[in-house]
Image (cartoon, rainbow, N blue to C red; front, side, top):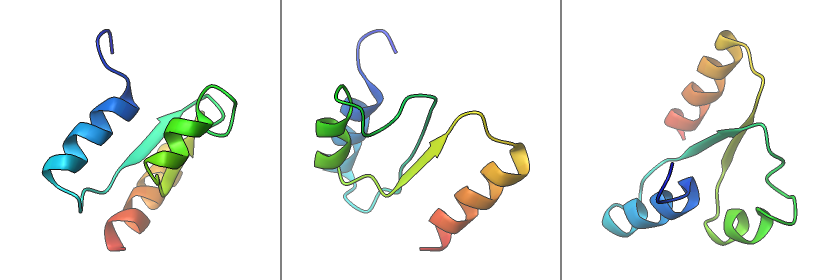
Length: 67
């Protein structure tokens, strides 16, 4: 996204709806130096690493939605 990161978007939306469920999908390691602080401060419970098969993606999202 050219003007805002996914972390910034998540933070803004959670201010509107704190119950928002979020899954981040990325090829980056969420615990790398670049991402760790933002990732942990937002208390992200769902991170899906790329690449992922569609069946597995659906399964992971269904798990998150049922929580």
